[in-house]
Length: 89
Image 1 (tube, rainbow, N blue to C red):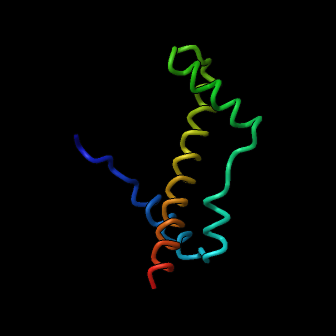
Image 2: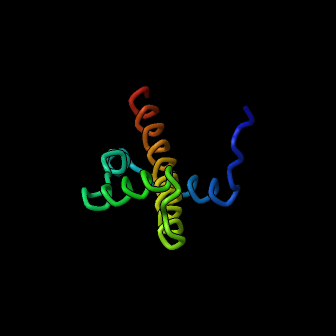
Image 3: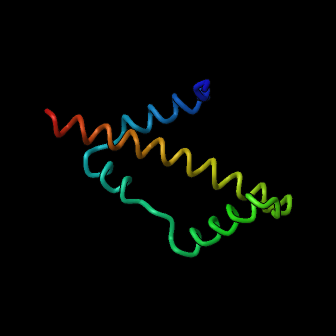
């Protein structure tokens, strides 16, 4: 399987934000979760998306959630790396 290509602009932005993390901010970022109402909405969109039942507007909104979620997941990965590196020093 071919590796997914990463947008260089996104990589640069994530690297810059990752450089701003402290151990405390990294821990807080890792603990960050959507509130129950938002998570329920996203779960509903995901379910209906898999069945092809989203309207065009809902599809666009769901796409934004997926993009934001991916961005946050990448930042959380950077935070975990920072904490792993700081604990091994």
